[in-house]
Length: 520
Image: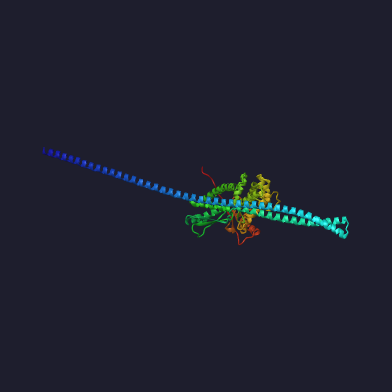
């Protein structure tokens, strides 16, 4: 009996211990859960505070950027406002000068009229004196007849002879005086008209060079532009026909080429590649093709702006495109489009002063060198090419004659053609407007490309390194690897026979075969 009680007690004690342990464990676990919840809430609160702080920082940063952009915009707006004010001031000065010239012309006209009145008075005085002299001669002849016992008929003949000689002499003197006075007045007025036209046009000229500079963010990009074993730089030069000069100048590369259009395409393409960061042969060709398309669109905009600036309307779209191409054409270092705009201004102003058709004069002046847009690729002089274009697009006969005669190749049929000749001479002969050495250099490089292109199988040619090398792209279907070497020798021999040049010229023939397919 005692043993069962002990066992029951022991079991009760054990059960109580188990219950107490389970209660303690439950309380401990509950505290841990509460602690974990508090920790989670604290972490959540800290995260919310951190997010709020980050949000405030971003808002402040955005406000700073907004303030900076606003300040930059205000600075640009202020600069444009100042530029506009300066332009308005120059326009006002020119208007004042034009008014002054107009007053001078009016004054000259009044002086001319006064001079004509004076000559008329002199003529009347001369007639009076002639009548008086005739009376004196009659008396003298009567006395002579009495003294010499001449007959009346003889005296009459003598009198006629004396009067005729005296009248012829005095008339010749009067005519010479009036002719000299008229010539002096005409020369003075012509000089004033031309001077006034030049002052009112005042088109700025910028002499083109044969290099363009591209700035780089850092010198590390020079290695990427060159590429592994020079593959990137070769691909770029082959695609654009422009040489890249990478030297020790920090953060700068130079693009060298005689063709301004190619050089501009290369500059824009290289800037896009540097900004994008992806520089490899495939990407280079893609960017160059895209830039060429954009440049063709820009040419049209340039032509439209030239027509808008000169007030010439109704040109055929193809003529507008050709005018845009003149922006990338130089003549003896002078930009041909700027030269054409200036000739248009001068012709229009002089025509207005002479009471001729100013609109036709402006149109003829703007189009007088349009043939230079394609003279590098078309047979004939730029005047004959320009006349053919004007006929093709139904321009006025006076415009056609002004284009044909502005170098005195044909006879003029209108005073406007003479004005275009004068305006062309004025624009081209100003000090610093043209440089003959650059034109000779460009013509030599053009001739070099023309010789290389004359061979069968050649697709494109590029003269680079200031004419010391010509790169020839051939069609892989027409020229194989074996014929490439022979072609290089033939081109070099023809250059040697037909051209004069300093030093030597390297001929590089490039043949590339590409197989293209698409996964669909």
